[in-house]
Length: 182
Image 1: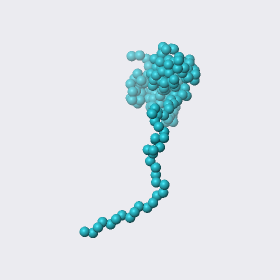
Image 2: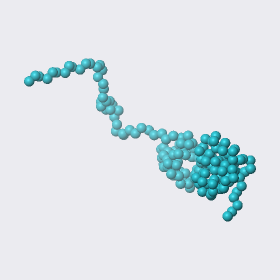
Image 3: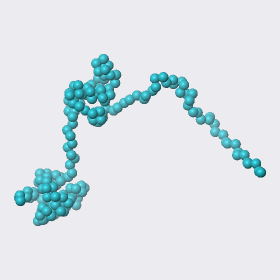
Image 4: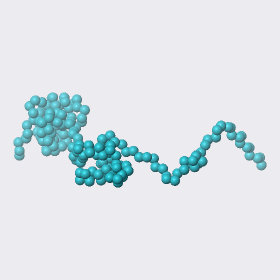
């Protein structure tokens, strides 16, 4: 059996219980109470039972607590996958969008996500999905704008004929006819 990692000496069981009582994060409070069990003379197994976890997790909590104190026991956001497009890629993309497409060079008259993704591949050899690219552009402050679709043969004058109009003045309905007696 290995020797357990000792806890910091600048805290005690009563102090950790007080911090747990005032904590807004339930998980942090649970971790603090488990460590307070150790400070009070309990075993690591008792702390694991108090925290509802295994011994390895209690060891991880001790390491985090020793490194950063009570704030080290707060839930942290997972780091996630690193961004594909770095700042220099984003700057080049912004310049391209602001400049606008040149039909003879780029082969398009307006930028679409698929065209920008292809340009990123051609320039930097980075594969970016349209969804990811849309999310990146939205973070950069760009919004997708599209014109309202219109049929090429639409006649605006003919559309006025089909519009429904309300009667100009409301009038009372005629009284209902009484059924004939038999």
